[in-house]
Image 1: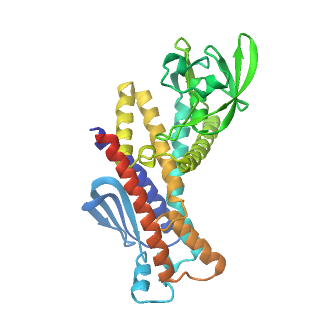
Image 2 (image 1 turned 90 degrees about the vertical axis):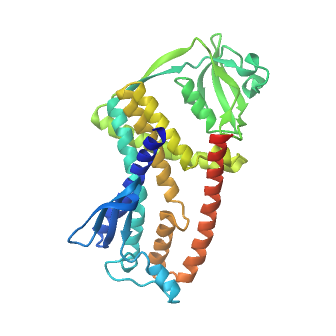
Image 3 (image 1 turned 90 degrees about the horizontal axis):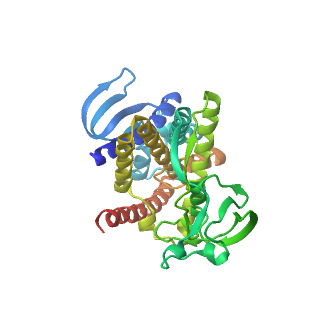
Length: 370
């Protein structure tokens, strides 16, 4: 059941992405030949007067939007044509800037969903428990742990007020900040017996997760209840934008961390692990109550949706970012890219994507079976 819930959730985000492409294509007069909810064998379909075949397909994993002329590239390649030509209502027959917008619309719908999800969470509000900012040194609890914080001069009982000048409200703030600054020098402001101290600590890099660590744990007696929202409508929209932007920044930071020697097969989640995690989040959230279930589900969906937004905008062939880059080149240079050049670029892109998929799937196998 967990996997089924995860598939449905992930499928919805993919469908919403394709809905973005569909909407932009219709806006610019590109004929959509088929638009499907789901993949695989078609269960039901209806052809509209405009010629679009609307389908309900068997496998509830996303959907697809087939636009007229998408295969003109292959035709030009097979016939050794100097450029890709298309009819006025086809994908390659419109102005490259319109093609750029159609390609961007899919990722845009993903970030738009993330914004709406975070706005709804802000409107609903929620309560959660977190440890406070008084900490203990991990190596004093178990000698197997390294503690750069202790080595730098921090002591059990210190209360952290800020890191690099950013105020820390609870231990989750501390963990989040440290985790995205691995292998870096950070300045931790603490209070010790009424005295304010600034201590410079060099964070460790956990090569399995990509997270930064400084070897501290929350004091056992410092658990506090925190509240987020609910906010009024104007403030909720502001929060939606802020949380979306914050998540985009964290995602880019996480991608950069992968190049610091992290074990990619452990740090990167593949489709199976994401599906399982999503299904588990939904089940556990609703087990705690409808309100918490809705909030936790929206949070996880927003996280995945923002990740899809960034991933699809990478300037690589076979991704929307590649189409955007090629369209921008054509718009600026007023020249069509030769089909053979596109073919070689796409071949390299597909190979790179294939390597990433192998790493992600290998990580999933190790996660589930080892």
